[in-house]
Length: 208
Image (tube, rainbow, N blue to C red):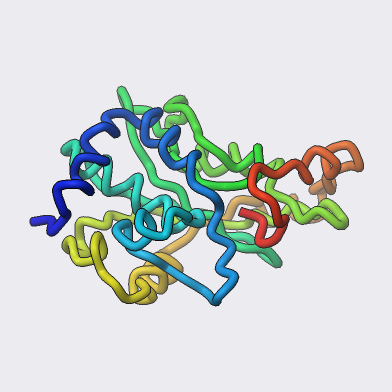
C-alpha cells in the first residue's frame, strides 16, 4: 500500500504515540517557503528537514495511519492571516491535535476535547494578528478530513499537493463566532501581543 523505503519506515516505527509524533515534529525547523510556496508530501518534508503546519500534519497523519488509526486533518480558517492545519487523534472518545507551529499558543492539544468545536475553540483566544491584536480565527472544518479517501499517493508524491490543499480548503466549514457576538470580541492587549511575539523558529511571518 505504501511505497516507503526501509529507512523511512524505520523513522515511523518509532512514532508510536501522539506525544512521540509531536516531539519528533518539534525537532524540525519551520518551512518558511523562502523559494516559493510548497505543499510537500511526507517523503519530501523528511528529505527537506523542514515543514510548515500542513506538511507536518501530513507526516503526523501518516504516522497514525501506520499505527492503524485514521489519518485525519482539521483546518482552522482565519481572516487576514494564514489558516492552520493540525492532525487529529482520539483517545477514549476525546479529541486531541498534533500541530507544527513557531508560536506557543497554536501547538499540541491533549485529548480532552469532547467535540471538534471544543478543540477548535481552544485555538481562538491566542490566534491573533500582532499589530492590533485582532483575533482572526473564524471557522473550522465541519468534519475530520480523512486522507484515506485520497489513497496513498500523497505519502510519497514528488509534486506539490495542490489538489489535496484545495479539497481541504473547499470542505464544509463551521463558524466559530456567533453572529450576534462578532462586535463583542476584545482584541489581544499589549501584554498578550508581547507574549505572542515569542517564536521558536526565527521569522515571525507567516504566523503558523
